[in-house]
Image 1 (cartoon, rainbow, N blue to C red):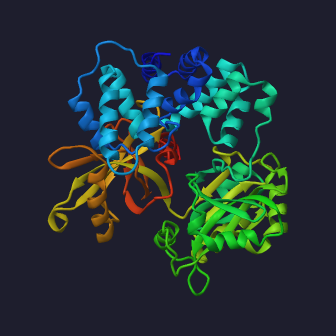
Image 2 (tube, helix red, strand yellow; image 1 turned 90 degrees about the horizontal axis):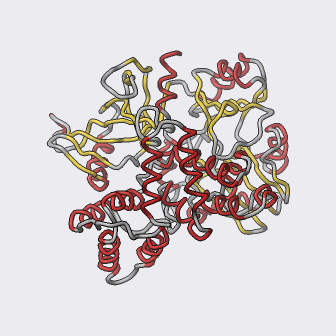
Image 3 (cartoon, rainbow, N blue to C red; image 1 turned 180 degrees about the horizontal axis):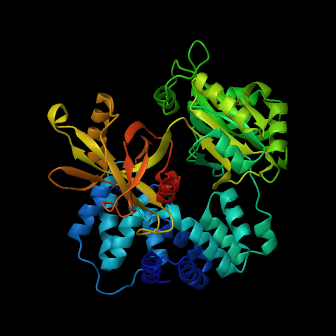
Amino acid sequence: MLLAELVTTAQTVTATRSRLAKIAALADLLGRLEPDEVEPAVGLLVGKPRQGRLGVGWRGVASATASVEPAAEATLTVADLDEAFERLAAASGTGSNLDRTRELHDLLAAATAHEQEFIARALLGEMRTGALEGVLADAVAKAADRPAASVRRAAMLQGDLGATALLALTGTADELEAVGLVVGRPVQPMLAATASSAAAAIETTGEASVEYKLDGARIQVHRRGDDVRVFTRNLADVSHRLPEVVDVVRALPVHDVILDGETLALDEDGGPRPFQETMSRFGADAARETLLHPWFFDVLHVDGRDLLDEPLSTRLAELARIAPTHRIPGEVTADPEVAERVSRDALAAGQEGVVVKAIDAPYAAGRRGASWIKVKPVLTYDLVVLACEWGSGRRTGLLSNLHLGALDPEGEFGEPGAFVMVGKTFKGLTDELLRWQTARFPEIETRRTANTVFVEPVTVVEIAIDGVQRSSRYPGGIALRFARVKRYRDDKPPAEADTIQTLRALLRG
């Protein structure tokens, strides 16, 4: 298939707000792909080339694009682009930068103007993947005539939509249904919605496990025999950084297990150390004096038995059996007053708040729904930095005022998966954070004006607010009230940022 057909389909999907129209366009494309084109095409559409990181940054792409005239006629195929990406990924050692530059120039010289733009976005991970993966999964189901639920489940458990698309399009229905958990292969973590109070959350869930929300880093731990692997919420393998977690899980009375939990540093009294200390230790390749303690709140597999579809009550019973001393504190209740008491206890213990989890709900990997609801004492949301303005006064020479964006998954206010600006803030920024962002943001700069540096939308920051108000200044129709920076979230990808729809719902609250 010509790459131009893929590019045209991507443009069609971007141009329409109709989910059904997007699915139809993508299904038509998928149905015309050869089997060996399916995985590369899906990777390109969601901005995740199957080769992973290609060693090409924004400056390299911008320089190559500016110096190469686009081709007049479309001749590149999907296979051509995939092979070029293979060569870019394989370049290493002395002279690799020159090899990548030459390869990139040759590739762009063979591409039309629209293809050049598409290739640049694929290289830089700017295909707005947060929204498109769900739409594309439904398109795979339509093209393959398979149940959408089966495709979505297989994609979550395989962790690779391209592989799932190939299986759905070329395999049998039974093969698709047979996809299950594999110990050692991480799955997307289940996510939580937000409520203003534990009592309000209980009204939504009914009987629930009200658990402490620890101020730590999310981990997913896989063990097969003595082999233990620890993954971040982004599914990166950090086993070598967390030997203390590996030792704890290796000592559990099981052979195979998959656990979901948090890890954090504790002070001398057993209370949580600041989140920054946990993340500093979490991100270190070398051993540090600070130890990280694992706490688990769910178990997805035990000794050959998948537990994803079992109710939370069953999973908690298994967790109590295999890891009783490493369970996150909590209490099962349907009483709003009890839920509020647990919430107060969590705050008194120095934790962030609670997560209220419906006791009869299965584990919905990679999804955010009403079965898990997080409750914090203040309204906090994870937003993405879109730009930063130079400061004045004592902040002269430092990047200060942040432009903040919320995720728009379905493209209600623009391009699907893009970020809608909802406000600015410089409040809460310490001198250390000011220095950090002044050094960091020019590295991911996309353009600048006299006063503002615009950046790739990849940096997640936790923002506390007092609410939102209607505003015609921003395309989402709202603006943040009294926004202030809590911390940067190095552990979260931009696709997991809070949505513009979540923030707009506060108007009704």
